[in-house]
Image (spheres, rainbow, N blue to C red):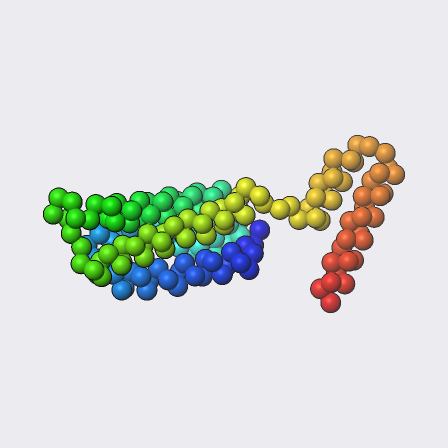
Length: 172
């Protein structure tokens, strides 16, 4: 199922803001999020490379999509924790920040919290509240009813034909 326009926009926001934040951040406490991000993107882009090779590979690796989104969510929680730790531990045990590092830490905390919402929404949309295509639903219904009376089968086949013609008219 293709992500909605809103989800695509949110994901693009993540990919546009993260590098800018990383470049602007010259802080010692950003190493953990950067390493997590490199790992997650290495896994993600290897998946994209493999599925681009052949459709059979895509179907064979379809189970990994939920895993990839899951590790992205773990990354966002890890990044949020990292930023929270930096903000709460500043000034203790000789661990002090400059003013720019304070702003970086607070901005990172807010950014990662927003990413949890973005990726959590994407995860729910793709894997928990996944919508079933109407045509797929009708075809599944037909398979279940094959053993029943031919009148029911004819009625479902009519539904499928009407839906297909409606879909064709909509495309034109």
